[in-house]
Structures are given as C-alpha cells and as structure tokens.
Length: 215
Image (cartoon, rainbow, N blue to C red; front, side, top):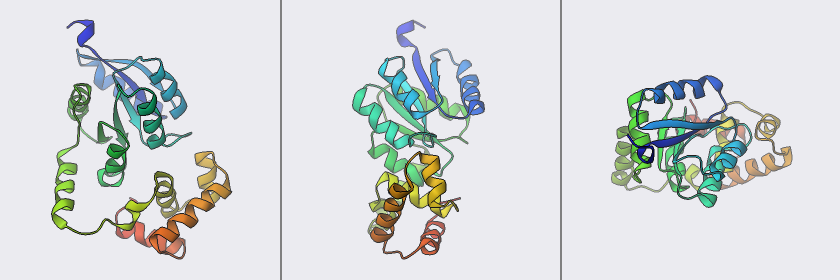
C-alpha cells in the first residue's frame, strides 16, 4: 500500500468518546488513516483549509456552528474534500438536506463499523454514499407522487429551530446552544410558523412528532 493510495480522514465531532471510537475502527484498516480531528465546526473548517485530508467525517450537530453550515463552508473553500455526514438523527430527517448542500454521503452513528469503512472508501473514490434504508425511502418518495411536506420548505436554520423547539427547548435555550441572539432565534421561529401555517409551539411540536422529525 503506497502513501498515494492511503485515504486521509479528518474526524470532526465534539464528543471525545465518539472521536476515539471512530479512530479505533479506522485503526484496523490498512488503506485509511486518521490525519487529524476537530472538536467544533470552526476547527473543522480551519483543518480542511490546510488540505490535510481526503475525507471529512462531520457530525451534523456541532456546538458552535451547525454541521450543514460547516459542510457548505468547506465545500465552498475546498471542494475537493469528500464530506461524509455523521448523525444520531434518522436518515430521512437530515440526509437529503446534507446531500443537497454538497455532502458525498450520510451515515447514522449507529451503523456497523464495516459500513463506515465502506462509506469512506466510496466517497473517497468520488462516488456518493447512501444506505439501503435511505435509498428505499427516496424510492418511496418518488413513487408516492405527492407534494413535499411543509417542513422541507424551511431553511436549514429554521428546520434546526423547529426540531429543537419540538424537543422541548426554549428560544433562550436554543440561542445559547447555537451562540445566537434570542432575537435571531425568535425570527427563525416566526418564519417557520408562518411557512408551515402553524400558530404556536404546541402545534409545531405536534407536527414534528406526527412527521417523525424528533425522536
């Protein structure tokens, strides 16, 4: 195995245990090495600029910036890097948004180690990666021939605000977690309620539960 053929991976996740677990999985492969790690979105962007990796494993829930934001920034600055999004969320919640934003693939963190390795190899070769379950979901959506649900009209920030409110967080909680002002989060809330023709948080939460947007 020559150095040229080795896939260099950057791991971006704010949980140390997750990072170490991913490192351990990849340590058993001969053609993949971990070139570095980032604990937040800004670190991931900085390391990506330095060109130290072929594939970025990016957690969709970062403490400083959303994974989707980081994804868009990295693809804008370093389009050659393949980005594989990792998440605890169900695939039908964020996968399509991630792929539309430029991700090469989307993988649930509960996937088997072998699937992770296969996904890294696939996106490193220039191909897209989606699981069999997501492929089936996409096929079902095509065959259903119905209008897109209202939540798909939301921006990434509006959608994130929706899921966080539906999870029981207040506007102040969300503002603190996303490092944004309460006024900004309130604006996102107002926009999403208007777009989805909802009146208040109770209706929003009911919609999110009904459409399986929150666990």
